[in-house]
Image (tube, rainbow over all chains, first blue to last red; front, side, top):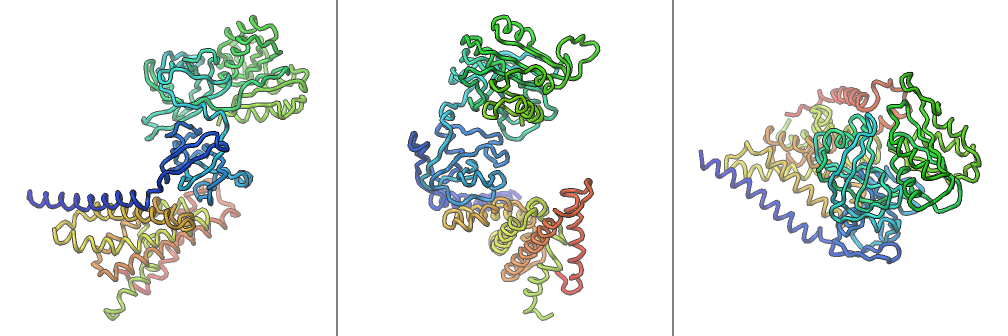
Length: 368
Length: 197
């Protein structure tokens, strides 16, 4: 009995060892592409990496972070990078994410495209300042019945320098809703001045992987890994009037921009339209009123689409698009910053166009 | 039927009457998920043919010369799957290194089918039915071709279906399974010709 057991263990081990050995040899010979060079932005930065691995991973190891939500499985289509040299043919796993126009620009899905020879790529300059941060949850606060404000204190590295309006990616570790870690993007709500903290506003989405994690599992003192900052949603340096429009947790980047303006003493005329369903969806009203006092040219206009009788609401009523249409003047001398659901943003863009805001002066951050 | 013709009978039987997908319903997951387009299902189909035709005789050798002599037949499930996984991995690496076009069209599908139950199923049938090495090769090849035919037929039908008016409740996997059922019935028409045992 014991001998049979030993023999079976021996044989299985033998087969496994033999195959493992084969794999190791194969890895060192046919799987070995040597070191290859990645030249970024016309040689601004040169990296030497181990060949044969996906571009996303190779860049990641060298500290260049490309935004990606799925962690390199080719299922989110976010990690697009322009490969101007050494790209070769598209893989079938990339094609669902790449449009004809992107093909002409040689845009690749960096988690699928493997670096087997020297390549030259072009990435937005801002990605160089993207880092991975180890943080600790300092405070969790309920803003409304379904939005929480999470304050993260940075540990390693301990300083971040985002522009107001940019976002970070929040890493959700394995837990009951996901069997591998995933990343989700959230705008920074704190102003850039406080470089050792990052504040996020996260609304609970039923069965959302990250939002459920934050609302049901995350506690003060927990460690959280984030990377960033990303995005081109930040205040442009012009003299135009500003129209801010947000809904729900779209408050976050706008709040950051406003606090930044206050701090820098920017006195441009600004109106902030905040849309909510009823009073229980409104938050940070006191903070906004406070800002109105400090900034003479700033007006905060919360609007409820379905005010409840018990709300005793005396402010604006109606869809946010109608309120914007009613209250905006000098559209052609205005710049708009929008953050919220795709439906709201698309509707607002149409209204802004009607009001004479030029398309190139409309900036937005769509939740997806 | 004469003894010498048996292997060829098995070859044809495994393509049609004993189609691994449509009579045993093995390998359904990739069959359902990759059959949306003809082009991708062609690539996957060829990859399956290749893997089945190579791993079946390979597993035959492992079974006859390693497992039987030591009385370890009961370990065949785990040994077969290890052999298949390692072999597929090696093949993928080789293809990726030496042939870019082949990797584009076929290699990318290899990791997908490593744990495909149809591949393991063919190796297990080969043991149960006590095939010889040569017969195993033909059986593996035939089963692969059978799977290939089934998936490209399905892909062809699904491409046409884009223009069809499918009831909302049946869209997606549901209608695909119904079609697979009809295809299985159609393939049953062959079953009077050669029996696979």
